[in-house]
Amino acid sequence: MASSAGQKKEEPEEEEEKATDLDELSPLKLSEQRRSEMLKTPRKMSIQNSVNKISSALQEEDGFASSSMMGSTTATHQFRINRRIEQSYLQEIQSMSDPEKPFNLGDILENINSGMQVIVDDDFSLCFKRAERRPWNFNAYLFVLWLLGVIIRYCILFPLRLLAMIFAILSALFQFWLWRKLYPNDPQKLEQWELWSLQLCVRTIIASWGAVIEYKGVPALKKPNQIYVANHSTMVDWLLLMYATPFCVVGQLHPTKPSIYWFQSVLLKSLNCIWFDRSEQKDRSLAMNRIKEHIADVSKPRLLIFPEGTCVNNEYCIQFKKGAFSIGCEICPVAIKYNKSFIDAYWISRERPFHMHLFDIMTSWAMVAEVYYLEPQTIRKGETDIDFANRCKKLIADAAGLKNVDWNGYLKHYKPSERVIDAQKKVEAEHLEKLYQQISKPQTIIDQTVGNGVVFVGNQDKSAQSKGSKKKRKSVDQDGAK
Image: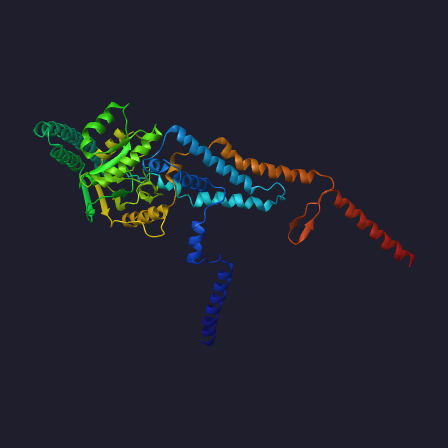
């Protein structure tokens, strides 16, 4: 009994010793503050740093505030931005490489660390990645249910929803014609009834999609100098907000596409939307003036802007462009969250055209979403436009349960050129060539620590060996003489 008790006492002591040994071998634990600092620290020689620098510099230039609020710019302007980003990146690489500094093998660790961070902390591609659907565990019973669901969605729901959308648009056009006949000399009543007809059309289309939308909060009291901002996943976002109250949008005019131009100039005429031509810099600056005039008039519909500038997968909230936050008006944040168990509303415009995106929506079971109307925000004393935009972005991300990241949406369609890809390779090749030249020189010594010793390579090694043999011979001759 005594021996067993002694063994029991020894066991916890051994466990404590093992625990202390494991603590010594385990990696150093970081505090939450230090961990957050490391996560916020950007990687060296990254395209992200160059994009953030150039975008912040361009936002200070004239005309960029308007274009940043309205999406991408012309091909020439986009080429100019790409060129400045690459120049900034190449200058950063050149500053990191010092030709007089000796190259050590340990310098490779920085590149390995940067590459590992790209793999581990790759939250940029996750912002624009479509959620993967789990495959069915097919058997005889589930296959019958799956086939029945396909028949219901594609052969019953889709034709009915398509007919409902066509009927809603045609009835809205008929009502527009009727209001123009009834109120030819009263533009105020004409616009009021056209807005009612347009909102009825939107509600009919949304209801035909089996929409279950939960609105949390109410829109802010309408007053001058007020802009609504929301996260962006699809063009359908505007319809969800339009379902509750009319919203004006800002976008590019498409006179070369008759169907879209008719939709903009006829169907949405009563909303007083602000259309502009991206091919003309003057038109973009005039659009900013029209925005200021629109928000100053209370009788016009509310203005809605998507400051992300691109569609995101409704799981992340990326960087807001500061254009809408630099006017000095009141910002009303709106958060939109879709339930992906019923529908994946994320639209990748370069992979799927909009009519096929509508087909995906209309063949889904239902559209379930939550819309959060948050408290209006104004810029604080000592707060910059960028800080104001980040604060509103955080409110939207927290309300919709999105991950708040600082990635610039411009990177979504940015493709680095070959000179950017080969820039870092060229620097490392020059370092390796310099190291090879140092090894190949006849009178050089390369010290390479292996364990606690030093290895000598080159002619100096042979001379050291010859000196050592001469000393040994002298000592042997002296011993013989004695």
